[in-house]
Amino acid sequence: MKYELRQEGNTMKTVEESLELILDFVAPRGVEKIPLTECLNRVLAEDAYSNRNIPPRDNSAMDGYAVKCRDLGNASPEQPAVLRSVEEIPAGTSPEKRIGEGEASRIMTGAPIPDGADAVIKIEDVAVEDDIVRCFTPVEEGENIRKRGEDVIEGEAVIAAGTHIQPAHMGMLAATGHALVPVYRRPLVAIIATGDEIIDLDGDLSSEKIISSNSYSLYGQIIEAGGIPLPLGIARDTKQDLLSHFTMAKDRAQVVISSGGVSMGDYDLVQEVLTELGARVEFETVAQRPGKPFTFATMGTIPFFGLPGNPVSTMISFEQYVRPALRKMTGQKKLFRRTARAVLDENITKKNNLTYFIRGKATWRDGNFTVVTTGEQGSGILKSMVLANVIIVLPRGITHARRGDEVTIQLIDTSILSAATPGYLDALSWKDPSS
Image (cartoon, rainbow, N blue to C red; front, top):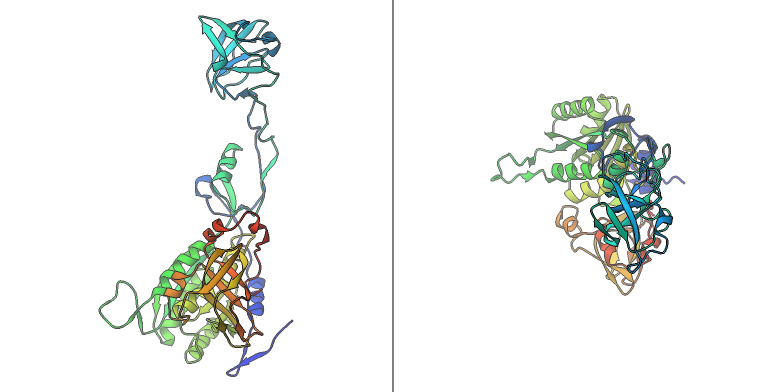
């Protein structure tokens, strides 16, 4: 369903429409092969198959003696089975002798099982004097032996495409012979702060200008989402400087993000620059708070995100739109934050035609999450993001939420799940953030 929301002469997109437009435009950027040591947190682009059996042959799971199980019979401490040791097999070597009747071979953990043996008796269950081995307990066929291919069979699919690679996956890729791994490429994401009123950290901090915190919060958000940040500094409020920065970004990056310069007072200049660069502006306002002035444009295959200048608006807009776009571009399956339901512990009022993204603090209480706001919710109150572990989502069509109402929360900090009772995770989802 399409919505026609009018605001100050411009057609406003809903949260749902905006997200749909963005995600329909972006796509994975292709595949590259990189060294296994660089794969952590990358996304596997192709199914990984084992190039070998693991283990490659039967081997010992214990330090002990390789034996024929029938030679031990009903061995006991009172009537031990007596065998003769014919060789020692350290890990990393191959057996030289076959085990015959009444024989055993000293074997270390991981060493291959010699021909003729069908079990390993643990070292603590024997007594040894010279080459005589007294065994004090029987063993069953196959006992303490890891069978060839017991973990992985050659040709078996071991990791599926789309997997977010973690340390265990790296171990499996190494074990199955993958020195180079096909992963989805990470996009280079240009960051441009705009405005005459801001300075960078290396500027004159004694002045009354505002430090460009957005450049640094975006830098971190881009890395967390899977992109590679490319800071391009501050563009001043002139067409020439904006054009210079946007051109540099377009030439060097696969995604462009600017912060500031998209409110009603500034937008004409940004639109003029985007038009001159051949961009197609898809929308410039979204029915949400914070972050209503939000521009999405396309420059060929490059998505452009013009985020608001206020710190909270910048972070929330990135969270709701840019983050899922970058995750899709890097091949990740789960585009959105995990969501849950929580009981609201205060009253909130809102405008009917806007979706609200409210910074909240959730705790586990009496078998459910309870949530309150972090306090003042102004779009310039960066502390509201610092204090938040969730984002409370209040949809269009309501004017208030009362204490005791159930609301949707997006989990920024999933460590809060550790307090939840067993089984609660089954009720959680990875839904569209507007749901």
